[in-house]
Amino acid sequence: MKVVNKIMIGIAVLCLLLCGGILVFALNPDMTSSLAQKLYGNTVDMPPGTEETGEGQTSGNGNISVTLPNGMPGEMNGYVAPSMDQMQIPEDVSGRTGFTPVQPEEQQIPDQEAQNLKETLGSGETGEGLSFSAEEYPYYQMLSENQQSVYRQIYANAQNLTEKFAPEKTVSASDVKTAFEAVIGDHPEMFWLETGYSSKYLANGQCVEIDLKYNGTADDLESAKQRFDAAAQNLITGAASLDSNYEKEKYVHDALASAVTYDLTIEYVNAQADNGTSAMTASNFVSKKVDMICAIATPCAMAAYNATMNTDIPVIYTAVSDPVEAGLANEDGTPVGNITGTSDALAVDAQLKMIREVLPEAKTIGIIYTTSEANSISTIAEYKALAGNYGFEIVDSGVTAMSEVALAAADIASKVDCITNLTDNTVVSALQTVLDEANKAGIPVFGSEVEQVKAGCVASMGLEYIELGKQTGKMAARVLKGEAEASELNFEVISEPSLYVNFAAAEKINLELPENYKTDAYQSFDEIVVQ
Image 1 (spheres, rainbow, N blue to C red):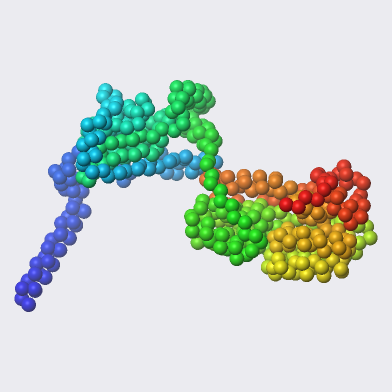
Image 2: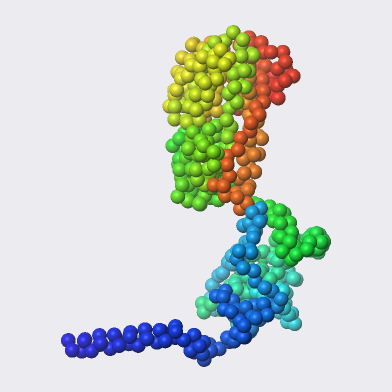
């Protein structure tokens, strides 16, 4: 027991001594600096008038003094670092870097294979004699001597489009990756060099082969370089007339950012008007960590919003008649979360006016809707509020699933003078069922958009959904490019409806349309096209 007590006392004394030493060094920076000099060397003494900011060392003349990783001191002459409150990044270029990280493919090989490579694989271009100044090529200056050797080799071999070569110095796979990243950082003009490469190394980590990869511009490199130089000269000419360096840099940055194109992989899934499928699809997209979910129609938009609520995945919706009623936007149009999009709110007043023109004697209008669709409920309320202005009464029938549409259509067709269709996802999916029952009763069905008219509805004061899609795409592009967050964009609408007419559908029930519809219609059809 006495032995244990002595051990515990000894440990306590050591801890007290250690804490005391830490306290002494913390209160005496000069002693800390002196110890660091003895242990590590390669430090830079701060001249008089220098302030240590925690982010670098600024000398009294406004220049920044740094100690490079290879132990060499360097100075960025003439540069005065701005304070953070002076830093301004224009919203239209913020986040648009186009950066592609280096992704090497590294393979460990046995010693015998490495010996064979040593006998057959040369060093290619060694880059001997090449020099890279600290001001123009800062990443090169941050490398060790062996890493700089690999840097020169990579640069020289890339200039000659050499694919495979052996490192001239003894370096690790990690050294090669560091050197390659430095080449990419220092030489954006080497546009033909891909940001991925391959390497082979031994069990001890020593790299024995480097394989560079080139893109399609390498097939006609001279021509590509000429185009590059011409583009660069245009940027230089455009920036030359600007006053400050900031304006010149911003001009070049904006020009490069506007020229960036984005490769998109789009995965389409049709929920088939099923809420369960919508929810499952949205959850699947979230599990794949997609960059964005685009949702068409209210059920899909609500499912996407619910699925992404605890993520940073933005949602862009379209064809949502009433985003406020659906809980996707506030009363002032601002988003409720990281979600925005476009609304296809129906022009109810214009639709009622058109129906009165076509059916001057009609008294009742039937509407079939899905009871779970918030947009449909709010649109019916608007119909009922405005119907009296045109001498109509609204008769509505609610369904909960597509299987109920046939019975509802047969029932309502026997009670009304016509039917007007909404953009209700479930009912639209069963449009031909509604049309069949209406045709049997000899009454017209009015659509809410052009595709419904093309499929057999008589007419519609509807929206141009291609334009709505373009408008939605522009909003999605802004978010993907980093120009804005979805949570910052109010939802948008297309305000002006257009007249669409199907003369074949009218003829099928012996309905005569107004003569002026032949010339006034934005688009008319002489046949029924069911897809």
